[in-house]
Image (cartoon, rainbow, N blue to C red; front, side):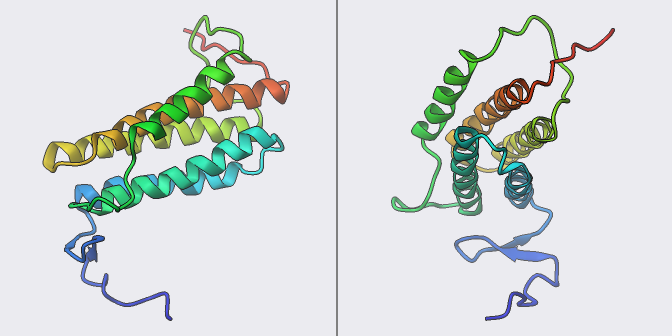
Length: 177
């Protein structure tokens, strides 16, 4: 099977239900940005911290579900979709890692070790994916759980960046105003 088909040469692509849409559509922008986020998280693994790597592996699988969710304008009952339990899983991780961290007293600069800085970068791409999903939701009906998942995941990536930086001995820096 060839990786190329030529079907996208005219600026359109297929959704999961084989509907043809512009590659510039809000739906493609949304799941394309989620794909970018997933690839960026792949540059972080392995961190050397088994618990963090396992969480990131799970996140990457969740992001594939988000993409499938956004690529399917009319999901059937057995199609992959993000559900409340995906959001709750990320919330549980945040709560768990918050216990390992000192409470924040100010904003921090997105810096640190290589992995910590990449996690901060992933957080910003996650926020962009969330904005793209909100834009899509303003045009078409989508699964609101997927938007909530991206919102919560950005908080989770911020928390993981802080944890990795702390474990790597990298101090947090407050911005100077």
